[in-house]
Image (cartoon, rainbow, N blue to C red):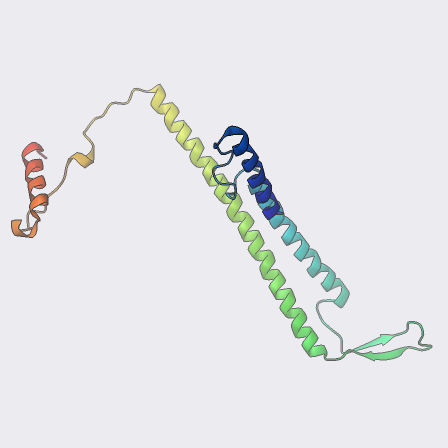
Length: 182
């Protein structure tokens, strides 16, 4: 589903480039933004739901993921109830438990990925809102600099000998010591 969406976006971008002579519709068609993000999230929900339904059906069929060694059969064409033995029940049970555990891990990882994607989106929206509030505040209030930026002051370690500094660094620090008073 996600790959089909990416291919659709690439085709749409290719047509847009032909019409508009080189300008692109998407900066990166494979980046999870907008519709592609939703497609990916829906595919994760679908995957987790499919695995969960598989586990539920398997649980209902085998009454708790337990394979019986012997079952009673009274279906046609048998005239009486007959004992039916399952061949290699331990191997089948081990394989079934492996499938159940791997499916449970897959469900858990899908849920974690959904939480990560939604949390990342929420964090991004909050950061955008905070940045917009800062810009609105800066536009509404006249901000003046109280002190010059810290990058203007460069501290020199007084314990370093002059021969340990390279000539270029030594000249720069001497100039700043003359021009800047702390």
